[in-house]
Every structure is written in C-alpha cells, then in structure tokens.
Length: 338
Image 1 (cartoon, helix red, strand yellow):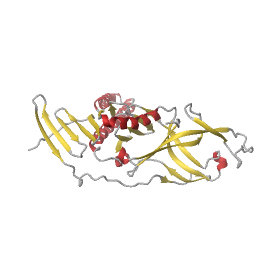
Image 2 (cartoon, one colour):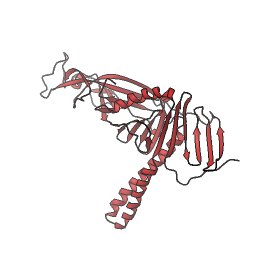
Image 3 (tube, one colour):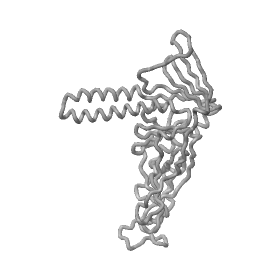
Image 4 (cartoon, one colour):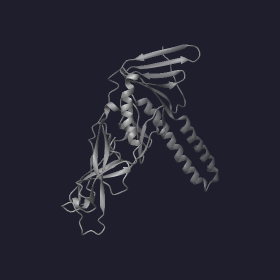
C-alpha cells in the first residue's frame, strides 16, 4: 500500500544538491513529502505527517530501460552561405533547442523551472495586452492589475532555491571549477562568438585569415530567474539565451525553454587567441601587435585607402563548450591570464 500525493499549485520549490565522492544526489519536495535521487541512481520517496514522527519511505532501483539518455549528434556548427564575396566556409555557432539538452536525473527540476518560466511569460503578455487595450477600454485595467499580481506571485513564489551541500573531499574540485568561470564574469569585456568565416583576400580583413561575429555578454555572479543558489555562480546572457554555470551542471535558458547538462556530458576547452580589435581596447587585455585596417602583402598600410587606420592586436581568452546533444558555445573574454 502506497501513498498518493497531489498539490494543486507547485511553483518553484526547494532543491537540495549534495556533491560527494560517490556522485551527485538531488532531493526536492515540500513539507511532508520529498523525493531523493541518490548518487547511486536510486529514487527514494519519503512521505511523513509533520509533528508525529510517522513516515513512509519507498525506494526504487535504477532502471536503465526507462532512463535512457536520448542523444542526437547535431555536429559542431551549421554551415551557411558566405556573408560576402570575400568570405567562405561561413558557420553559425549556436546551441540546439534547450529542451533537447537534458542530462539524466535533472528532469524534475527542469519541469518545475519550465512551469515557472511559462507562467511568467503568460503574465507578461497578459499585462501588456490588457494595458494597451485598456487605453481604449478602461475596464480592462482590472485584468492588467490581475496579471501584475500574477507576475509578482510567480517571481516570489516561483523561485527555485538550490541548496548546495558539498562534502570536504569535493570542495577543492568545485572551487577550482567555479573560480575560473567566475573570473571570466569579472573581465571588463565578455562576448559570445556566433559566426566564423574564412577570408579570401586578407587585405580587407586587416591581415586576418579568419573573421568572427561576436555579441556582447551580460556576465554576473548571481543566479538568473527562476533560480536562486546559496553560493556564488556564473551567468552569461546574450539576447534571449542565458547560460548559468552551477557547481554540478550547466543550465541553458532560452525564453521559456530550459535545459541542463552535467559537466560530465560537456566537452570543455580553453585557449588564447589573437584578435584584431576595431573597437575600444579593454583595460585588462594584452596588446601583442599592431596592424592596419587595410594591409598590403608586406604587412604595411595600403596607401590607396584614405581611412586606413592602425589597429591593435589583442590577446583574448576563449572558452569552448560542446556536447553530443547540441551544445555549441564559444565565450570570448578580455583577460587572457585566466
């Protein structure tokens, strides 16, 4: 005889994550009912009557047949037509749909987060639609107020608290991983590279044989909505996509879609790169050379161009993240010493 548990509204909630030598364990729930995913892969459900000491525990073993990790190899990049006659082998660097990038064991947390994000989006759309229509039909301002209250409720009650407990033998590993990515958030400039191309005539690319298109990143050490963590994390936002680096996993948020990958499922590499900077030079970078906007074969300025100015060659850092499920991200940062 088991127990049935039903809750009419369940936004957010609390997740406890334990990082130990045997692996990563998760637990979530509310007062009186909690589900635990152990590091060994078993699932434990605990129901109790608060204040009585009476509880019911049911544990099931890992079932490989029902927990297959459905992955598809999407390749590392998408080849598209050249951006102009001087470029070829143009490739977009973009991630797969977030919901297709989910490591085993993280489904329950993502389901809660997705529900919160969708309700938040619904509240936003409802607020602005009723507000605009209310300018002509004032009675609709009542709905505007209702949507505003819904948004406030979602933003406060829908937050998912991530409560990390790290065993001493794992603390140094977590510190090493997080300290590096947190240092990247502290750089003066952080970008996402979204496109790469090869150049035919390097005269028009300041001597560079490869060019990139990049977008500025908003980097912070705070967890982005709908998450809240009890320790420092790293978050990078570009457009509608946010990458949230936690001690045990990477979360990908694309609007109301959300995915999460364990670091064991991600291939990570870092290196420095020489970049011809046409914009402002960050103060924390290194200038390793000079070139010209239009350069001749000898490396000097092509005097046929009147606006031919000298450009610095900066040394930047790059962090590349890929996975078989479709993660394909390159983060460029201004401080190459990290």
